[in-house]
Image 1 (tube, rainbow, N blue to C red):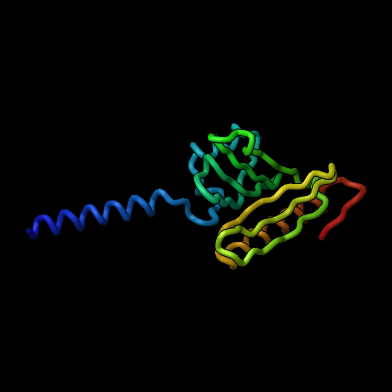
Image 2 (cartoon, rainbow, N blue to C red):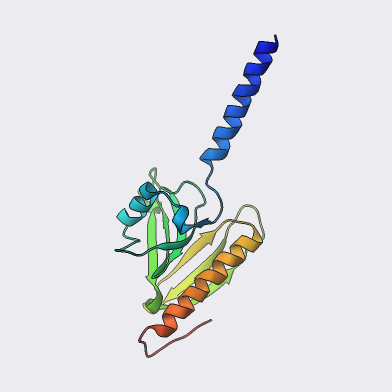
Length: 161
């Protein structure tokens, strides 16, 4: 009987460890994303050359969902293998962004998001599902990067929010 209890404890530990390891962590530093995942994001057309991800968040698996900003752009993607019509890949380079609006959501079923408006009248959302401090850090960092790059880019019309 003691051997059975020991085996059950080991199995329980293995199941819990496996579940924890399979979950995506919250907001990640771009340097912690695996080469395999970076290659996937690159294949979506969301990274070029030596561009690097600064902060990244996924609401599911990285191959399904990604929301991030780099040294050159803000981007979001969703890959729905069951219904490809629901899939999307959105991004805007910093000089093309007119404004960014923050939306903090206080419910557990929805994620907070940045709404990005471009000079081409395109808009899209960049979702972040993390605690309020991490979400604020992501939003503030993305907006600061945009403002820095937007103000240094040669443009005639600059509009910030």
